[in-house]
Image (spheres, rainbow, N blue to C red):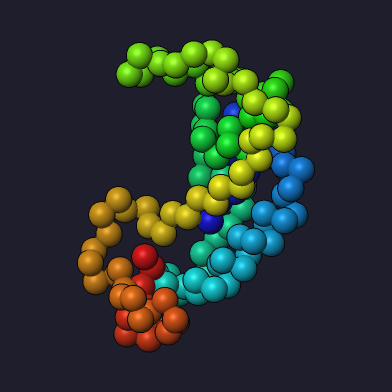
Amino acid sequence: IGYNWGAYPYWRGVPSRSPDDAAMRDVAAVMSRYAGSGRVNRAPYRYSTMNEIVYPVHGGMEDWGYAASWDTSHVTPCAPKANGGYAAEKTHYGRDAIRAVTILVETSDQKMPPASTLGGEEGVYGAGGPADGHV
């Protein structure tokens, strides 16, 4: 379970903390406790910044969506070219416009985990039961 930061500008040999790190960490901790182990390794889902538990990336959507309107020294406006792009004036945002917190949840290192590990709908509310799974 990862949260901001997750990009190279916020990695200086050790990960830096976003201004809302304590709140994001608390949300991720609750998600981890609620999810339980998912029967995989019988350990709770790990949680931390994406830089720490996933890896830093160039131009991560999560960091852009969180900081594009106020951290202009690290996050640059988008300049889409796909499908003909769009006007540059559509990429100017007020200082308070872009502040979304995005939580990345990766439940498996496998992109197609075995069906037997997926669980079922009733497993969401029955941790440890026969329908408990990691997805």
